[in-house]
Image (cartoon, rainbow, N blue to C red; front, side, top):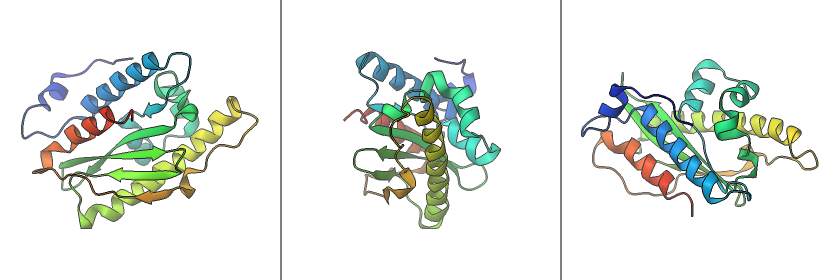
Length: 190
């Protein structure tokens, strides 16, 4: 489930550094493996999506079919059975300044939460737009998954879910957003 990581990715864990996407993907792999092990035979309750999925969809136009080919066995083949989905999102703010935030989709409650430890009024609209695009992508992905597996029922339509930005503790400086995302994902099994 793990891929090889570079020294650069590990150096991003030093203080005053932005956490590298590979570190967040390593966390999603770890949490996915934990969730699969914990719920063997019952299906996963929480689905942790890889951090690079957003980049592949928004920047390179990845289709749901291609996503299933690339990430299916690791992350996506049982995503439709999950009650909660966690998607780390990256916002490139000023030049190479990276900010991470977490999108949590609660399937039973029909809610989408954007957890953002370093909110910005000027970046709120671009972040919401990116989330809406990813929700549209996940709707198409789930439609494909339901056609393959759950032929008797309709997939949920996440674009109809309510989108909220709950109040969460704020970080002291811009470098900790990736750490906050990892901590929130670790607590997502509630």
